Image (cartoon, rainbow, N blue to C red; front, side, top):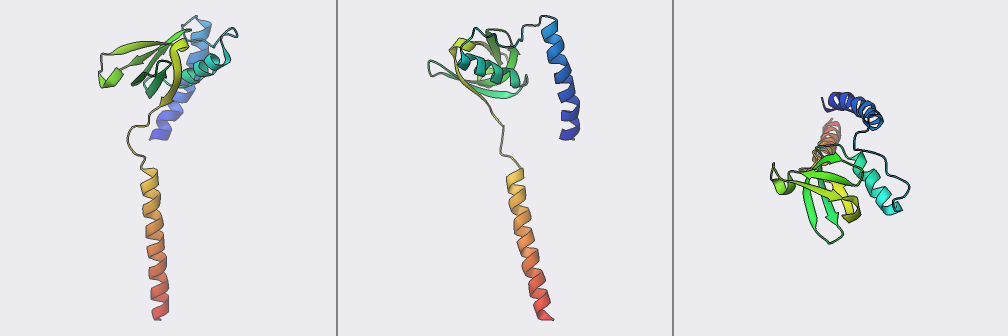
Length: 134
């Protein structure tokens, strides 16, 4: 099901972004006049889909946690700051030290893999024990 949802969202994003840039929507590609660090951070911010949980570190050491909002040429929006659905904060790229996505909750892949390995070993040992009884 997740694969089907992503297969619908990805083409829409690939089509929307160039159309939005052509129509003059605020989200844009970083300009060459910006510092290389700021260009890298802008590129990183533009890669993050709207609605994704993020953690932002500012130059002053402050940490802002929320969801990714709209992106403009010099700023971007963090929504639901601190878990408050109505809270919004505009962050300037010049004030940004780092940004990362937050993956809510533990992944099921690792525990599932461990369970499959344990079951495989148990099945193998059982098969060996049964074969040795004959």
